Length: 384
Ligand code: SF4
Ligand code: SF4
Image 1: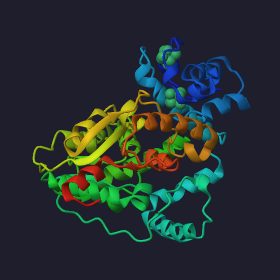
Image 2 (image 1 turned 180 degrees about the vertical axis):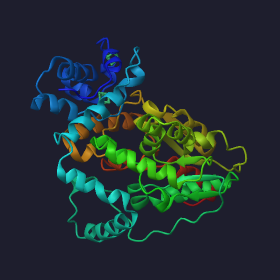
Image 3 (image 1 turned 45 degrees about the vertical axis):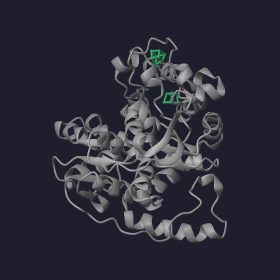
């Protein structure tokens, strides 16, 4: 069967194996079929040689975190992320991936009011202890959140779906920081309810395309769009590839991770006493391996904390991976154990993470996480 993969992309892998040490699923299993090289070999066998799509092949594809840690390690420039996304889209179209319950669970993401109402209800149920731990939800879901209010039109702040429902305080901190740097901010709110990242991960790229088109129609042209979730930013920077139009490429070109943008626009931020904290930086995969702008996090944090420390695991994934920690709890837990060990060796007071999925997944193991924007806001306002 064809997986719809571009032959040149598929054949660009020379099976050298240099990516293997950078793959979290290979690191925890030692199994070749759980490595990028193994998965690409299986894609070739299915598409080019007519090999059957066995349960083992599906397992190999499903177990990929889609962290894309293999991409920067690859000397041949294999576009692994696009190969895996296309594979999943083909298999989801044929109902071999993304079961009905998963499609149903993703539906509310494009309806902010439903998501907010659901979060309120969950925050009440949470107090009874009836919300299963394996869902990986934060312990303190908000019941009520202050609305975000526009302060100008220099930049958009993309607020998205789950993050706005669970962690609006991060958006509020980010907005205050951007305003302190001298810029007016318009939160996107209902204009752009969801970026489609989780849908693309699940193989439902058709839904991502329609969300992308909606967002491109809704936001005024030319205004920079700042994103404080690494996964959302990576998805929005990929709209050019996903839709293949000049308009989408132009849209993606004005999407910035909030740290990336601030690093170039922080000259007017006030000078304040740094927080007396030793902070470890956890690089979300979609910031480090996909957007490749993770160094900006250090630039913006350096003036505001006493000490920044690096983890010693070369940016290996934490196992969050969109909904991966819910869908693959065992593998996600083993991958997280490696990350937590690396964090423990760094002995930080706090861990700065620029992705809500990573921060919730790590917090589930007792790691004290905070968004970089919250740290800067804390230093500037004196209030956490
Ligand atoms: S994906 Fe790249 S690094 Fe990995 S085996 Fe193929 S060519 Fe080598
Ligand atoms: S995306 Fe991540 S989990 Fe998947 S093959 Fe690449 S390194 Fe491994």
